[in-house]
Image (cartoon, rainbow, N blue to C red; front, side, top):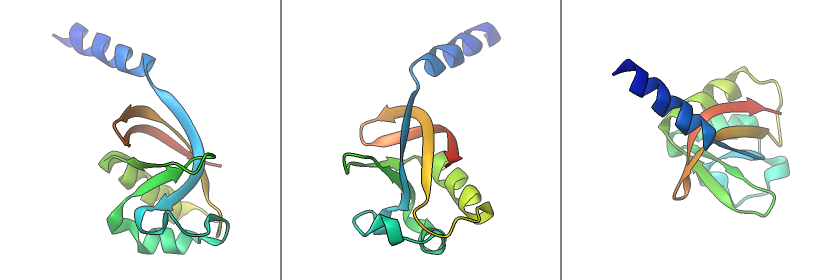
Length: 103
């Protein structure tokens, strides 16, 4: 059984994608991202997070991604225009986050 689990994990990692964009809370996704603050992201954490991609499309994070994004935002010193690189799999309009890296 353990061998099957490891194979399934390896297979899911093989299909992972990476996206880069502006890390923003769901409530502020349509606002001016260059002046959007880290503190606003933290204050609006209840709605969750996502990325605004270069083409303007917004993709939301799953719960794991929301929790990880909040931890990273709280530890960051960047005040505005927070960018991130996210790795995971897309399930509809939601990224099942495997990793997030602030840029």
